[in-house]
Length: 300
Image 1: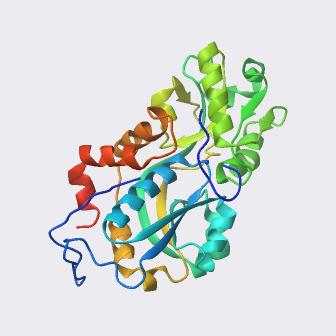
Image 2 (image 1 turned 180 degrees about the vertical axis):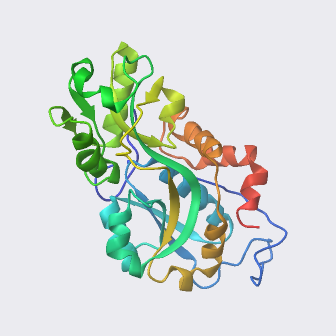
Image 3 (image 1 turned 180 degrees about the horizontal axis):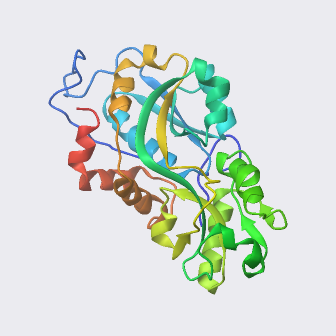
């Protein structure tokens, strides 16, 4: 598995070329037909390290906004740094906040200085996944079969909500205190998943939906009869302290932004599974041309 380009703490889409005849209500158009971005043209999107759905959505909106006259910078960091930076306008917006559970701690701490622009996908879920031919189907069976998985739960970043919930809810709920919970990074977890798949071994990883791994690897989710991982969540766009004031047009676009899991999977697959590089611009541009009607709707 390749490592994502980042700036900030350790590492975890799209639209380009919109030439719209119209623009949002009350917003003038320039001579080329693109929306006039106004005075505040420089916008910074904060992206969580290792969270592929956020990387994909951010690359998508980077392309959309740049075609509409904005100068867009993607800056990678861990969630704690992102939410703090949003309150000080070091970052303008992030597109990967999971609510009401995963990132609730950050919203409780910083939410008074942030603006929730709404959920663009409401099918997000935290999961514990195993190879599809594993001899168990439920977390309730795991403690008695831990040795089949090397007594190891392969985790992701220490600062991730999934990591916290696994430690604080999943492990005690199912009596898994005797298992090793390895905390490293999403790329490291995916590398373990790839290696186990290639070797035909059992593997147990913390994961989430939507994620391209479900299309790339033969895996299944373990049932969670205790509900320790929580219900399905929404993936929200969260604006910083002055976002709506500085970028009213973009705020309106993001409030209307919706993306199905199927569309997101298709974008993630071409970016992270079928492509083995770090320059996502051309890959995203190709995806845009194949999904033109959807892309055009993002700013119409």
